[in-house]
Length: 70
Image 1 (cartoon, rainbow, N blue to C red):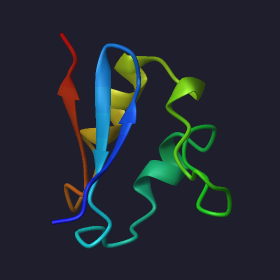
Image 2 (image 1 turned 30 degrees about the vertical axis):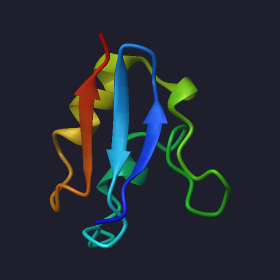
Image 3 (image 1 turned 90 degrees about the horizontal axis):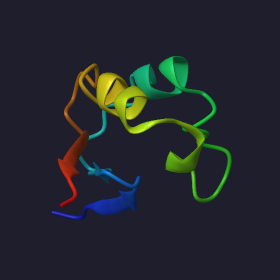
């Protein structure tokens, strides 16, 4: 399955576009990070890792996940 990776320092954000249900929870919670009108549409540098983790935990489809960087 296609997965896009966005490095965010201590974590890497993973996005699976085919899983996304476009609920827009990410955009509503962190509009400074997620902007579907821009490319790239995810700008991890605009939030701390903890903010990203918290938002990702609210993704209803699990299209957004993360892995810890060592």
